[in-house]
Image 1: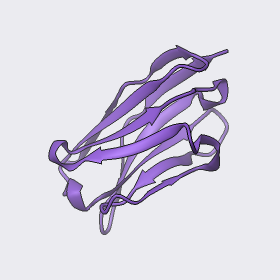
Image 2: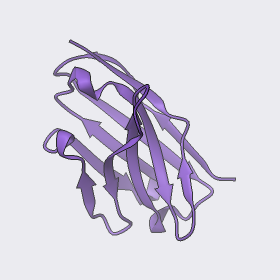
Image 3: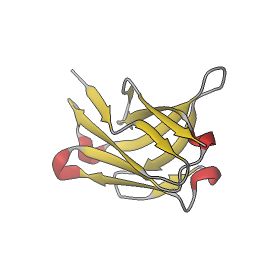
Length: 115
């Protein structure tokens, strides 16, 4: 059974930092493309950051220079370091994994940034 378990969300003030973690089980993590998405009420889920099995990263323009995605294949874990957080970063953040044939999602973790 595939599981993606996120942690690290919370309430912070603008300008502060958070680090999200996602531990994967039940998949060949080293060969999976991993990513972080976010969603706010009434809006579509958007890709925030992604990392291929080879380590190539991609970011949505609004977080470039502030967020960093990384992975630790030995721990089956993907991270999202979020610095200089803004109120508009407030959302539920979801971990995503894509194997050769299937997409998987975590349950989400809430990030709230107060002004």
